[in-house]
Length: 237
Image (cartoon, one colour):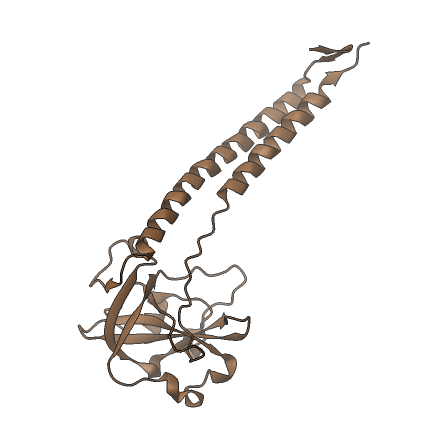
């Protein structure tokens, strides 16, 4: 290749170093494009599911992913003595707790319900008797799977009833519960604004950064190729 006396002559070592990296960057970009297609399809399915009217909670769930973000209804009574608060940030950035409470259903099963958020000063039940409704209750909310532990989050300590992320199996075991529904039920927000606990703690927010990642990998591949060309363009002797 000649350009005003310059010509392109690739060096062997630079070619051997560049080609594998270039191929890897392109493959990573292609993988993110495939992931983008999968994520868009997943978001569409979840949005359709989220918009369906509430249905009675199923007796069993074979594939939890098929019920995530699905509105359901269930009736029973809360076991407040087995309440499990999980540290969480409130609607306006305040520190507090989400109240995960077993619900004993009419058919003899248990569902762990996130009834909503309370500020730190209301952690003790004696300070909030208005949040303990006796008798049968009807709960409407959305189903969620167990949480993933964040990288720097503390480990749960069931012995002290100290929880930092939701784990259905671990919580059921800590409270000696059997026949537990394998997903959490996040209760919808109470129509009475300002009443504790504040429900509606699960919003339909699905992270989708695959397009950004794909553009990043492809961009790095282009930059690498340009550097390779510039490095191997030589002046005439």
